[in-house]
Image (cartoon, rainbow, N blue to C red; front, side, top):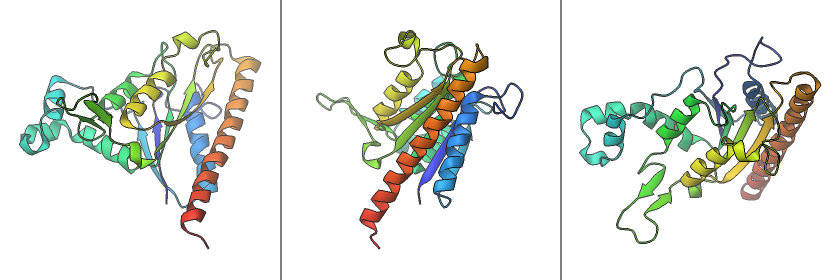
Length: 234
């Protein structure tokens, strides 16, 4: 059984196409999960809404606790890190992470940034040893074969690599950098554009994104099924 972690980061609570002023990224992430469940109904789905229920931002106490060795932490430190521990536990359980992350002012929403800050944890998702020559930092999730799918939405258009606004896109590049730092570098992306334009351009972008999601789900589930057949031949 594969575990899929579904994350939504939009401040908008509904889905476009269903709810008035609904979120395109929520629409895409829901579409992905629905298609996944059709292909693999026995898989486990975890859900985390950091748009409506953002994690607490990192504080000075959090930093103090996180960089204190677990065996010497005081009780209050465990309390401060409890939410972060829960988020890291979810991430470690997941084989596939599906994140609906809209672009806000060229970057990720505040709730998703708080999520990132809570899962980048020394001793849990990355290692650090100042005495280690050459590589004092190292990823701890590399051997876990996790996949990340980022589903985004943008008001303007042309944010893909090589396009007119590529240099202003700090969503997918930022997410790739952070998760790569933890050891997750199998990353797939789909995005809707033209939200501020509306009309035919937006509808065409939505249709293409949903088509791309269906193809991506088919690709990823086929890989899992092929791997399962190799290790569990009939």
